[in-house]
Length: 319
Image (tube, rainbow, N blue to C red):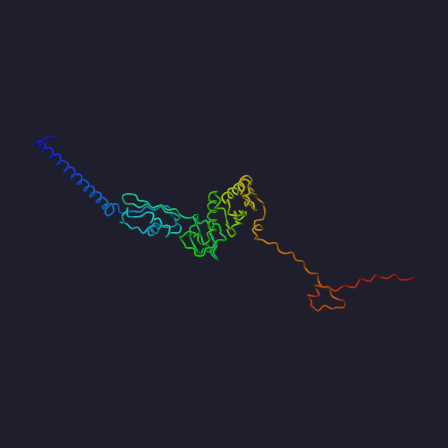
């Protein structure tokens, strides 16, 4: 291409347009960065501040108690709030809250949905009880009596239970795992509300009581859900709701021939609450020797009457 004045002007024009386009691109990028930065600043510092709360799901705690547990204040920015952290604060501060869901509702509301815990068990600790929920959360310590509808848990060693925490598997891990499995299985088969005692003292001889009328022997911890499922079938099929006795489910480990049976009997005797008193025989009264005289006073005379002389038979006169 000849280096003419026209070609030189055209080349200069192209270079100018490229430079102008490049400058415009840089300007657009800077403008976008500015707009984005301004939007972020306004979002986290000016707009979307908490102006209201919506709390639902709890009858045990007031709205003020829940809000105090959140540690969130009016005017806080919604997007600076870690909803999972806030939910954890609620469940830690309020023992009877099993779970909490915290979410943002734009432009200015924080929504809190609560699920209350239900007392499912009363773990005996000395002379008092430690109340626990379905999820193993410690709801109360030092309760004098187990509440109505809660199963007494026997055989679990809790050294330092803390309200608001969960059963620490480091304390009595084997029995706690067994207890959690039992509660889960009883809940699954809709029996948990009717179980009155859970004994995990012996991991090889676990047992429950049902409505304080039927003892349920489970044997070892093997196949707990499977055993509970057969206990449920026995309760439904044999029409034993109003009877007392024993269900032995310890043999329900063979899927082909599960050995689960009910035996009627007195519940207190089966549980060992009633013992048969020993048979005693009274000693015969001591006999008194001849010619002895009673010296025990009137009472002694009344207890041992003196023998009477035989009546004389009238004789027949001789002719």
